[in-house]
Length: 479
Image (cartoon, rainbow, N blue to C red; front, side, top):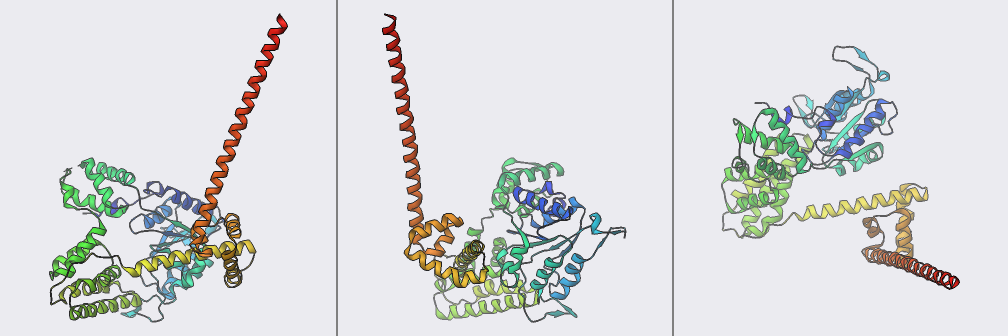
């Protein structure tokens, strides 16, 4: 049976579910290529898996008649391979399906699609299998070069834009149009599911469609697969059939999986629950490592469990160094089943916690992002390089902020700084200062409005009094 995610993949841009603003910007970028004057030669589509990033790229190539050339995670992504596939495709002319030459001057373009461009770790070592190098040495640097020299439109698809832009990829932030795509809304997903049901001639209860759309959390791919699973070999689907799917509540599922890992030794059940969570081995390792010390009661069990976690971490390292994602399954089993089988004593129940390392990393990312955007604004305002701004201007401004509140308020208004940028400049006290300033403005505005209303009322009273006096004069004159 054909996979519905492929059967109903959007053929045109109009069929893309959600992200209407981003789609308009994508079309505008493509039209600039069609007119021969693109300001940005490449576009970065970022967002969670399953929300339509790759589908949008292929739909765009279909609508504009561009030949798609894709390089994805299953391919080797080192400098040699990217040069041979993406860079060569981006700098040479193209041919039609029947072998006819089409010049870029007549609109004959190719769309270079580099999927999972954020999974490039720029390792120095090679990973050779059967005489072919599957490593990613200098992969990101070659992508940067491709974007600079390309004569064809390029789409970079990523889950985590921070991984793409960090290190040698920092120039991509400047050279590419960045479109962040968001999970689709439930009504939009329901509309798509209805269309699929009509096409497949299957009667499905509206409650089933709404339940699938709510449970998928904006993941269109998951929603379509869930629909196919409940519709297989059926012509009528009722609300009872959707119960077999369960709820795709990942937060609750991961707690259930942790409970199985720490309290049982049933490898089949553990593996089944871990698959339901749909988290990659990196995340599972962090969850297990965070909650392990409080769950096992003896030092020997904890030590043995961490030994299995260390082996899992080694396999993950090999996965990234060699770009061999076949090792993920071993890493996943070692960090879950290995930890479960390592215990020999009674375990204790505790409230499971979100990984501390992820909390810190998330906070650091937000701080770094605020710092970068602040330096860009200051650099543009002072007409100097970002390097000079970071080393000379920014430290002096931070000193001035600590002793001059008026200067902080003035700079925030002048550069239109966000709350995060203001906090980076002047610390947490900036929130109180800006909040007080905001209240002062609101009170001043209310006072002005009140004064205006009072003056209008007094003017009306004056006019009324003048009219009354006029009537009196007229009345006296008649006598």
